[in-house]
Length: 166
Length: 451
Image 1 (cartoon, each protein chain N blue to C red):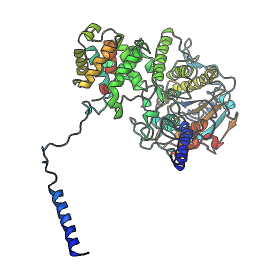
Image 2: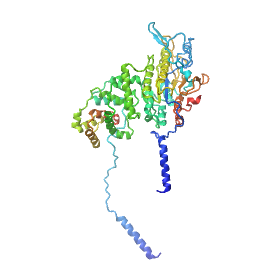
Image 3: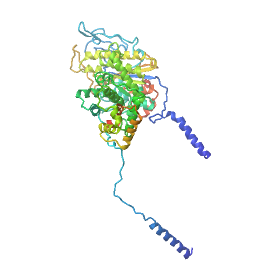
């Protein structure tokens, strides 16, 4: 290889390095904000309630009054006597719904202002506001299911996993 | 596609199609090695600490109160004539104020001993002779030296083995407890990380569910329509539950299907109707909790026809303070088991294809405590380290079981309290899977392998 050829290679390499160094002129902006993991709004509720806590809160949420200690003891024993707690809670809530004393809005109230109904539900049972996605789903559900009653929503919220966790 | 690749893909697909039916929801291969010996098993945990002396040894008062009166007060289970003197184990003679004067009539023409196989001398080999300990051993085939009262068994229960390895549904497996005391509601599944709640059996303490607490908080529960109301409730609830289910944060349910949940609810409603009408099936004599529990166990059998039902009895434990009541309850437990077997034969789906197993959860002390009852008879505890508490018996009866066979004796103990779990696994054809899980007591063996 002669000197002329070597010089050409060196010049090409230098030119390549020059272009590589100056080719990207866009500035890197650093905002100094730490990356965040987006979690569902209820993700902090990761501890299960005891059966006593669940029954007590359930009763208060449904009847808007506190449960007597004797009632609490009996309800606790009834729940303990059935192994599948979802079944046991469903029966308990079904029983309470049959008393006619559960404090809940009428069907007309629910349908005249679904958003208020939904926000009140989330606040009462989950102690939080619904997300926009939740609000949209629930409003759509109310509008698309004319046979859906406030009682169905109360039942579903009362026996949901989120209501059992804190 | 190249020929080689085509052949490889075809082989993979064919393998998948062939293998698919054997993959259970639990994710384990179903390698059922033997055909089931029976379609149904009923296991009676009999019943609160039983002394050999008053049960299989038939010594009545001779083995406990220094009175030379022997006899068999368990004549539905065991062969042998009843005592002829100092009868105190039957129903009360209220007119003459004599406690236990009238023995209960036998229900079975032939004793279960003569119909089946008796292991008269079985060892409760390890751990303390406590009720929960004994019950845990009975349902899991392992001993618990440090078992806490409020902890679930550390080893899988027979319910979990059956649901995971034999693919049983939740409503195929039932534990009917005499109550909710003594941590009985914890016996339907273990804490073991490879098994646990998703394979648990259903639990029911009927005297509570259908007694005062249940009547107050369950009875007359609203009857939602399964295809309208429940559909709406489930749709809303499924939406609410979405991200909790993904995180495993659930109400502790037992993975009953929606259909099974509905069936359990309907059973509860059906039973409340029977309670109101006084139509619950009960043994002819039903004056204690054990006998009423057996009645409800029969109702569960009739309604669900489960593959496995475990029922525990505990009234015998009154022996801590009242020996006469112990004798009465032992006699009643025998009456209850006789009734249970008779009723099983009256259920067409279970007749002639059911095996019943009977085993006390542990024994009782050899020497009495100082408490005397109305007959001046001494009471007995079940103390740690007392050798007599380690003496129990096991009995098998039903389809395919040798009749009139006795295996072992007082001088030659054969069998272990941990045997029942591998025995049930053996009956349902999954003994090898249960053994290879490696979570049984080292001495646990199927009773069929001990004959």
